[in-house]
Length: 114
Length: 116
Image: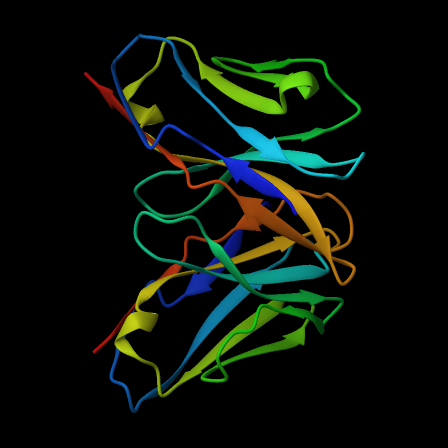
């Protein structure tokens, strides 16, 4: 089963709301990733978790807060977002972070901030 | 620094034509890994292939083939007898290691449209 699931598929939120994005994989992967993708641009890495520990934070604003409760789950908590944060948020997983294993991506959450 | 260049922003062909998507990379690493991903309109990135720097054999998978040339730092992707379902954005990517963790450096992508 090479599936990464993400919920919700779509999310509309106001600038004062708090919401969370959820990602789940059951492939036994030990590395999980959050990417942000704006229209007509490539994905931009936000965070990397390796063995449930945060290993990369690409200078992401603190209004984005990642969490990895266990090896299968990855959350992204959102608070006080700006309209420019509207984008497709992609989650990915791979066998291990330090090796050149392919990343498997979820379908993404389309976020609109009003 | 690692960099991937996909010079073709958009390509449009008629169904059954062959089409090649170009990818040029820059890296100082002697061992490196390259990837191709497909992103259909649904949004999910679909892994197509991984190639390491010490294996220069070209690869074919059905209608897809990849030409890896270290001498020109290129990793081009050809679709033979294209079909409408091949319409998508295609990304070439290079692996970078930062703080012991893997990061994919993506090219800007090529939007491929196959017209019936």
